[in-house]
Amino acid sequence: MIIFVGWRNWIAASVEASGTPAMLLGLLIAVRTATAEPPRWLNRVALACIPLGFLYSLWDFGGFNTLNQWLETALVLGYLVGTYQLARERSQGYLWFVLMHVACGWLMWIQGYPWLLLQQIVSLAFIADAWRIQREMRLARSAS
Image (tube, rainbow, N blue to C red):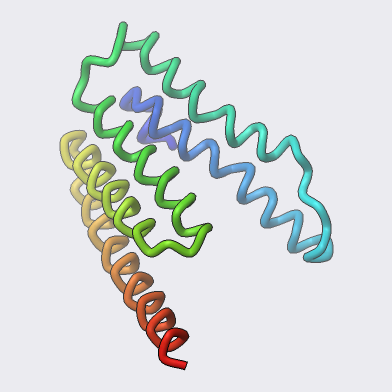
């Protein structure tokens, strides 16, 4: 988040900030029993972060007019649609995650962080592996 905020990548920073409630939720579930109902405010905070980041980006840059904003929007779209698709056990969610990592890698490259581009490339390998595993499991279920 520090890099995103430092470069005024408000949209990408808001996506990262929206992950904080999910991490808190995971911690709460680990501390409580797994059947405990999560607090509703955590979901609301996560859902509020993304439009706030987008609106702040529009305000800060005077509209939607930089390559960074386009890359950040692709990053957010890949994250949100990918997560939604995977939650419904649809393997095309992995393709959306590819979009997310490519956009983030490109953003990191143009801002002078080649090691973070490499991190995104490594993440793509994990996505490919997860897609392969899900595909094999689906084939095994249909064969039986």
